[in-house]
Image 1 (cartoon, one colour):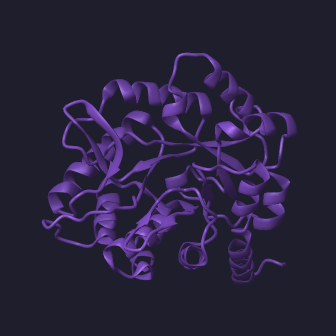
Image 2 (cartoon, rainbow, N blue to C red):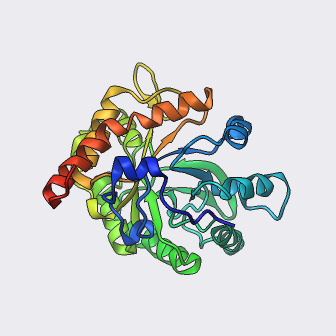
Length: 307
């Protein structure tokens, strides 16, 4: 059974009731989460650390039984989870995979996820999956095709969907707009939410030479359901989105600006390679409080709430 208890007391103390709840995140007020990863399973189950929520990779649990679901049930007994997918491929030309959607919906019902996310990308051709998050051409035709599939998925799954901007390493000559304009047109046409990954914005801005602050400034802030932060690997001519380092200061600066524009929003730290101890990952995630707490204080003052 999914956890349906009250907010973590620590979250209430830190955030009050000012985490932006909207239809794009199921009217929830979540705080700071981390990804549920195999090296941390034993620590979580034995130590029961205080965590606002976990993000799970949907595809890891879209099975009929066995250890993954047994583990998931133990997590759901004590924690809230949000599903994050990596293979819907809304931008692919072919129709959505109906069998995938059926399995995903079964997991949605099992976890009671208030919203789920996947990537604004393509990655499959004629039923063959690349297992990569490939960038789209920023064209009106792609907007129409992608938004249609997001709407279809959202209608079938009966839960809000937030699409994530991906990091990219190539651009299309046929693009008719910027990436942030494309993201805006897609989510407005699909009437869905945004998972704003500020690390991906920073990575792509370096690789393609644009201003990341302009990106954050010009997306529909009211549609941001969740924010991702992460580390990356920098090389001489490009950056790779590796999720294997702490968050660097310029990404924290971009996160701070996003919070100023969006409001205190459910935030998730991704760390997927060279994974350190649970406490190290959780400690890195909790650095987000430096930016969330001042914003909460400002919003309380505006609302006339005693601090």
